[in-house]
Amino acid sequence: MRILFISPNRLRLIVAPLPLGLASLVASLGPEHPFRVLDFMFAADPLGQLRREIAEFQPEIIGLSVRNIDNQDSHRTVSYFPEVKELVDRLRELTPAPIVLGGGGFSVMPREFLEFTGADCGIVGEGEGAFQALLAAYEHGSSREQVPGLARRTGAGWQLNPPHRVPQLDRLPPPALEYFTPRLYQDTVGTAGLPGLVPVQSRRGCPMRCIYCTTPRLEGRHTRAWEPEQVASWLAAWHEKFGLTRFYFVDNMFNCPPEYGHRLCQAIAGLKLPLEWSCLFNPAFPDPELIHLLHAAGCAMVQVGNESGSELVLSRLGKGFKRRQVELTLALFNRSGLPYTCFLLLGGPGETPETVQESVALLEQYEPRLVNLKVGLRIHPGLPLHRLAMAEGVVTPQDNLLYPRFYLAPAVRNWIWGYLEDLTARHPNWIL
Image 1 (cartoon, rainbow, N blue to C red):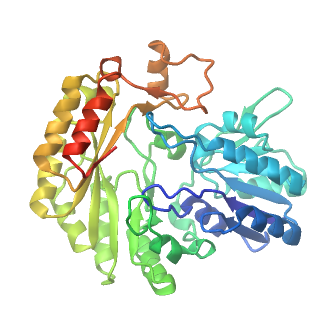
Image 2 (cartoon, rainbow, N blue to C red):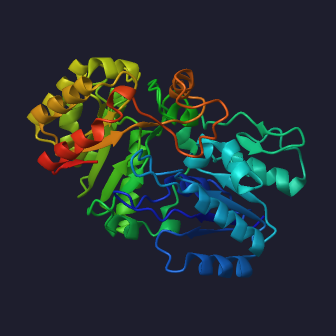
């Protein structure tokens, strides 16, 4: 079957994100399936290009990757899912080919997306293997009951097959960056005024139990990983082929398991290439040796996922670490000289003006390079936060959460915006 893959995302929040999931999916396809990839990010006339591609290629199936639902900003909320429907409607005018949705945004709310957009079906979770199973079902007219992660409408209403998670990631080929002009992603300045970073994933899955996070649902709680030497070989190949030097590890936690982080740093350092990269560090696993290895391997910036400095709020968020671990982690980075940024996720269960000020005072003490401030927790269906929000009457079971809803603790709801306005005036590197 002739396949047209589309990445419609044109958002460049912080940096322009290369569609790594779609790059991994197209790399897994065999030569028996001719395909083309249309990336809207840098297209001067994306819809015109779309019309030309369909007229010339005559696709028999269309894979549409959905990355973002909204900007997750409770103060200035912008929703992106109407654009997906507009694109599906346009595709219906241009081709009879079935439209298959996928990607992280779709996988969080598959039923809501299918009902809103009218797409034919979608793949929830990891697409390698699942999409090929769907192609086989289309080609041979066979049952789709066994297609992993397939979401679709049926005569009985709605069906979601159990998703498939690739058990051995090192059997997958490297992501096919060549379909996405990776050098342009690296060199394009995003909204933060910084040059781009090319995403890399070395692990999937997260064992943590944060009440608001969708990662364990999408990737599972069991951590699976490529061999560190394999990941390092990708960086070397991309450096040689595309001239790439700046990367961002999108792993939910670079330092979990800690021994894997050690091996990966050693493998990258062994390349002896002029690479700069960043990663996400979880305070649950403070590790001075790993921080030393990060430095030696060319890590230029670390994002510390602290979220709060309040013992009460950390517990209510289900973070899996305590304030003392946050303090130890920040102290280790300060002693190492390795630049780091921090997050504050404010307004969660149990938040009060006192806990907000406690979190702020902690970061003022340690002085990270940058602090990202987020107010309110985006509510996604089926997560512990969703159940809590229903119990407190913030949302009802009938609410369609495709339309953004946020949890914001009553004690700070009317106070926090004025406080943060004064805070960011004092700290220009604290960004709301």
